[in-house]
Length: 441
Image (tube, rainbow, N blue to C red; front, side, top):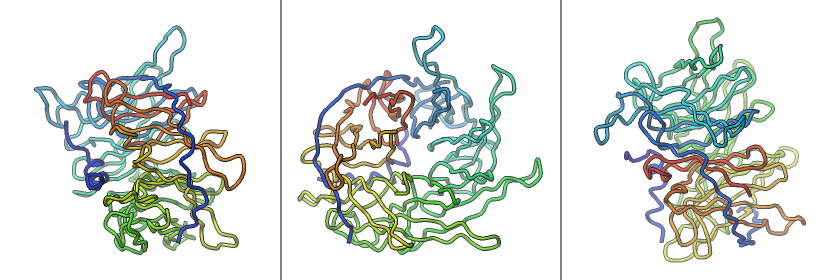
């Protein structure tokens, strides 16, 4: 089993573990509802192995995702005299038409080598025509950006096109966002935000542009977690490191608390401009080091921080938070609210994934550590009936790092029937291959 870039880069500080406006901090209710079901166990070989990306779904309820290993290529090494495989794109179709289980289809197996990418570690996106877009961290030189087009006839093969190959040692660090004009936006690992624009003539080359470098403390130094677009085409994201905050609950201290940013779409002929919306401080129950990106919800920004919140002694950096950013009136400063501060002495902690909402306004995510166990927890935060009261915390599921999964580090999605779907990198029937799970809150 190879060591994951994500675990190396983002979770290394965990080994050291033992002015925001804070509106709501709560211990909340800790009701436990174990309603998890495994809907697919990966098996390696020609099947996928080790999913490391959040899922997406289509209107029919099918799920789509990627695995870092598995597939039919021998170009990415061997383990135990078996090809590891260069990764896959898969579809999971829900039960129906006389089928009582989810059905997996491998849409594409990456080939690696000198022409194709390998090791997809980020979520996919759709366009209106049903094409899938994604990234791989490895390729002929650096990583790749690819398009996967559905077959023209039922039962045919999907067609992969490599849209861009990154220079040597440059890898995309997140999934893609797509605007109405078909431009793709993403982040490279610890370096910059980029745009990939479609060709103006059929068969032409896509145009790659670096939009914003994150190489200074005041602008951020580790953009990660993905980007989101607002209705005006502006981009929003988070930088795990950098920022002007210097609180004691941020590992590394000054310049290591992170920030949330906006990239303002330019008028024709001008450049994109970064606007720092909030610098985390790691003080007074504020968070530090956002790793899972952000989402836009009803005009506000939501996300998690892996550190910050409540410091619990013994050199603890703080156990992480769920936060909300609200825009100021007339273009004034954004206001940060800590919706929940985790505490390892009483429950789960260390959220590293993003958040998702259901139609009722409940928020969902997961943590790296669970209470008294190391395998993690899926949780729900329900908004208060009265403004200013605490959000209610519910433990939905605790994994045992066995048949029900291990290392739930990635964002969830809300599917049909309000079922939550997610992936576990390891665990399942083969503890090295991972699984896809569903949880009914």
